[in-house]
Image 1 (tube, rainbow, N blue to C red):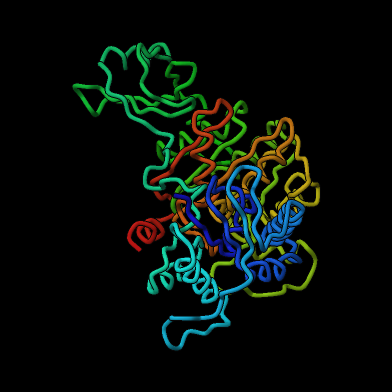
Image 2: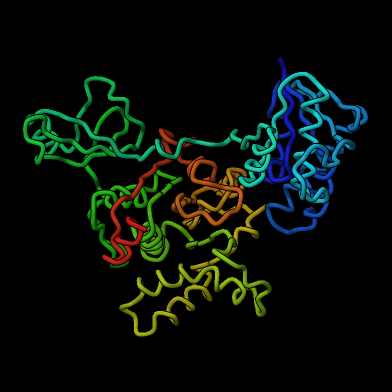
Length: 433
């Protein structure tokens, strides 16, 4: 028997294509959702663009018939905009019938009584799911783009081999695998001796063989890898054949610093790329400060301050680090931009760093990655356990989605960094708090 899904506004603002994600089932959009989408359409960000996209989709669909009567979707199933039965009947005393959430629940309750089949309220709002459960309405998150974060691909594996094979690997710099080890291309491997676990070697897997690290011990802009995960990350960052790198890890594991150091080395010293472009989502942690005066650079400065902090650390041997950074920005060799300005661009021959990528939705990640032009490399860094976006979590954000989708691709690589190197205090806080 088919199901009926009642869609909340945040589902459509998260993914406008959710209209077509329910196969032969019925999709019901409360009229209050249309009103909320209309209130968001003038925003000049991803939410506003998604709101406009939903409106455009519905405008095309209404040519097939009256949306209030219901229409058949091209992929199967039905879509209907529900106008009536949003009064708060049979609900707990004190519930405000004018609130959007309560009207959603009222509609779902009416549909439960008025028709056969299961009715499910679909929302990314945790509190709305709790309220729906209280009054007996089944409620779920929109899970089409979720991954299992607890089992997220780490980019690292471990193999037990004989003493002779480890000796051969050190001697030849490569080791041909005789059987399928279930490894992905550009996955890193810790080789351990079957009899003596303390004897080990680090390798990268591709072309059905294990290869010794080439760049793991290199020094870039004064920065050297401090642990094996950082050596693996540096290997991916330095390899120009790898066009997409994802680095996941807690605060203080060195993700952003390593990426900036290699970006500066590649753009300023090796001249492989024309410039280093740094971007990050403009999403506040805590209360938003509101309107900021000044030029675009001055408005962006508070959001980019963590990048400036890392750059000043990298330029600490210069007499005036801030002046050196400003000189690079004036020359156009170093650029910092908000993600808002990336849509519609093509970015060739640049080293692109997207920091705090855990605050991006899968759709926003796709928007950015499709901007990458010929000869460019893009690096995504972030901590899925520190998300400031109201409707994303460790399993539904764009960074973890990208890691799972691209694992094993010939031009992509991933590493999860585990050990904090910022300071003992930072490592203790990240681990215990």
